[in-house]
Length: 558
Image (tube, rainbow, N blue to C red; front, side, top):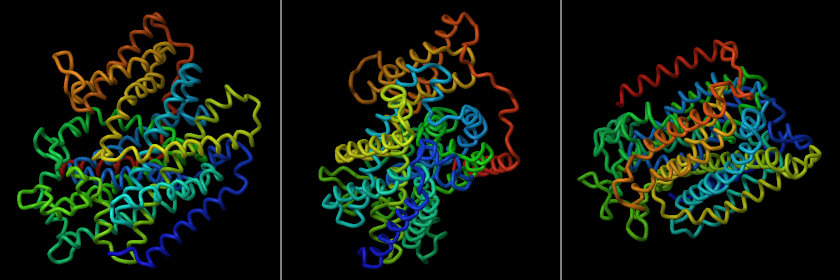
């Protein structure tokens, strides 16, 4: 189905609306760093909840997770469903401390709890991660999807899509800061949910014998029941590329293992996620926003995973395999490798009708642009408040800090534009991002968890823990990547790698802290009172409902 004139008008209308809202709400927000980087600490709960989801759901989910649904199945939804539970922990145990400390950035907590040197190390690390991994991968996946949907998938529109997405995000986020990002996110998240539902319903209706959505879902389940297992056994699901899905989602580890390292790091100590909670009117507003985000996370697999499974069923042969004779050519690279990440773009291109297609593509653009805008704002915040202000211009005016923020965000975007085309032929980009973010997340998580909840943790222990975490993590990469062979190296799923690395780093930090502090509390240790973790009734009730829904979901799809 072509991208008709009505689709183009809908898409253009969406772009004008978002840029207009962004510029309108950001009037006068460039006069101070608090206005620009924390939206004047004025965000209500519903804006926080919507902005959390919009910042999180990007091409990485719409395209990458749909591709993993195509390759692995519903098990990949654990990233979404376990995130809902993780958000409850963040809202109850982490946010009260962060907001009490009146933080702008996550690295500022490191300075308050440990010291300036470690804060600077982590600030540089986060800037590099945002620019070289997050911004770059979102641009690449988004441009690939638009090239497949609007073009022929041959790359002719790829660079134009990169430039367009980058300029779109820059048009309002660089000027308006977090206010523009958060308030446009409210519109973006509504649009991406509607667009995702349209794609899912159209795909299920098409595969159904009677045109019904429920009967379509039943047919998909009957065709590939193994792809609806949440807890995988070794050899249960083999992806089209021949990889055992257990290596990406190793059984029970998604509930009690390495998944927690990935989720706690991402939702609790990731600047571009946590920044909108720091901009809340109050702690209670922030916690209510967390609950809203948790409920939306429960819905997300229906929007981003199920379409990938449907695309697999539509293209598989009688033996349940993806072959060139039966599958659409867009699922194969020039070398003949299966490109799972083309699942969602292919569905949109082939089965979403004229009119609705413009809305769905707008939803996809909303997911991409909202995440780009969030990452740009957080990169600017960390660089300005944690590197530029303390080291280069301690007496910079408030307007000067805002100007530095805009310049640093612009430079980060330019670097991402240059690097994005280099990510071609990665296959499941979502899994790639998770695995290589997992090199650094265990060490960072160890530093924060012991810093928050163990008063004896010293600054030197944290520095050595961070430095040790990288070689430990890379040790576990040797055997899986075939860099060397021999009995010295073990071959483990990356979730097990993350969990073991996290435990080892914490042990190193505990030993160093005891040796250095001789068992005494560290002078910067946080004194916690039980009352700080008391949560309002709305949070408790919402959290209980989320937990009950999770129990039901895992019971049904175990």
